[in-house]
Image 1 (cartoon, rainbow, N blue to C red):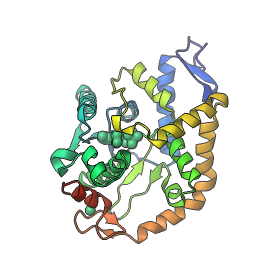
Image 2: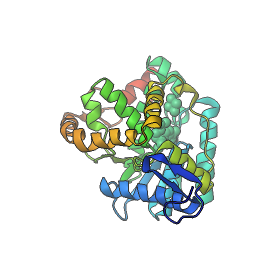
Image 3: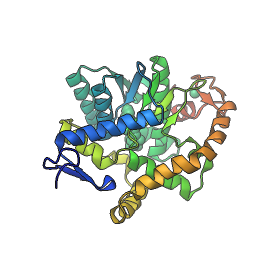
Image 4: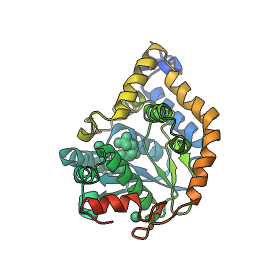
Length: 302
Ligand code: AMP
Ligand code: FES
Ligand code: ZN
């Protein structure tokens, strides 16, 4: 197996591209895919300040590394979710990465700063853990980006994540969710711009990037995500991908090209009916926002 770019012995093949790469050319391939996503979706402009949400996992650390390598101004944001050893371990990886690169890591701790953790929040609100967790993270990421005066908030969602979420949204024909499933969401009243620069890379590629680039990341999955339906969708798509390489990318990018233009205007209109939450100021349709409700039910505060 030879590298597609330089014909040196390859260390990894990427079936989707029908290509193999040597060590340096693979790292370059990953950086080029991120650059291409940033340019084609107009995600980040030169000189902008980026806040990268880092979980300590492979995707977000690879993303932070790639943005730093591209000499962007990129600080990290770690949110402690209070999920026992998993949280303390993942924080350790995020901190170690920041220290090694001399990069700034902003830290928020849900139990210390807001008085509740995800296990308590999820049972108090009778929500699945991942739903309470996703809601809390979305709120805190947005708030941290606005408070810190960042131009853009970047997350490490990759092609597998986005294809699995799309699969779920299509199974339910959930048009409002489909309308918001774009790799860049513009800023607006109370909203920071959100971007997903890894959409052109698969999970396998981000893991290989970390290994080849010497980035230590937490390998364990969150213990509360077992049985999560997105994991099932990922498995189903992996089966299809193994038989017909390229299906996942065709599914996701076909959606962005053909269906997204039809469903995003409705989602944009939805934003117009929002008002600031009286407790925390976040945009909401309800009297009090979902984050403040969750925090209050879990015995915390916002
Ligand atoms: P997940 O929702 O766990 O699939 O994570 C998706 C993305 O959200 C990751 O790639 C990170 O960018 C971000 N993220 C997840 N958990 C955290 C965390 N505890 N702190 C900061 N960012 C996170
Ligand atoms: Fe959110 Fe596991 S990281 S429930
Ligand atoms: Zn609120």
